[in-house]
Amino acid sequence: MFKEYINCEVDGYGFPHWNGFDFFRWYVLPTNWNFMTGKAYLWYYKTAWLVHHRAKIKQYAYEARIPEVLLAGVAVAEVGGTPERFKGVGVLQFRQLVEEVLGKNNSSSNATSVGSIAIQIGVAATTIGIEPDTLTSFQQFQLSQCLLVDDFNIRVVAFHLHDLVLYDNPNIDTLYLSDEQIILAASRYNRGIMRGKGDILMSINKEPNTPGREFSEYGRRIIEKKETILKIMGGN
Image 1 (spheres, helix red, strand yellow):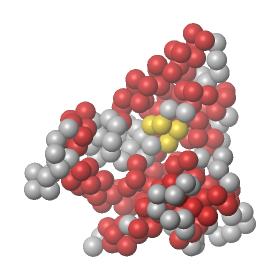
Image 2 (cartoon, rainbow, N blue to C red):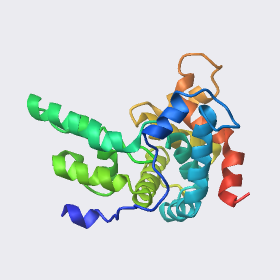
Image 3 (cartoon, rainbow, N blue to C red):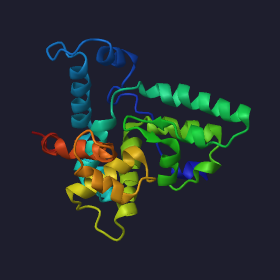
């Protein structure tokens, strides 16, 4: 049954995944926009990733019926940072080992985020129609490797965002969203669905550095970069 939901191929010649050298160049070296180090390197990488994948982002955003700026904005927020294969090969196995030794369920290992656009294994499983609790360790690993394939990763994230939009706004046309609805869905992507909708919406207009302001920060950053993201997606 599991293989019916998993359809991915190793993208050996695709866009270079963020690795240890990238991490060093971003995190250790000082920011220099001429030499592309520090924060400059991270933003060059994010921009290049978006340019390389914009056709797929457009395709899967339309397929999932969400605004491309929502999918592209989440991508910009997520790509880069932690070396991608570390979580799928190191963190996942460590959590699986702890669960096995302690006799616990797979909730901790399912919370491992994998992929260029980081998404939890359990969330990805739910999105493609698999009960996360039923995943074996090998199936978790198999899904984690598929999430390292950008095509598969982008598509799963797109449909998860669609689900998040409907969580707060049932029975709407998810392809056309207000800035507020985009902020809400993106913030859910970052923080999950535990926080009340009203708390997130109220935080949008809170004064900077006041309690609760952080609830919508992730989504607000996307709207702040909306014009730039759309220019990149448009090829300008």
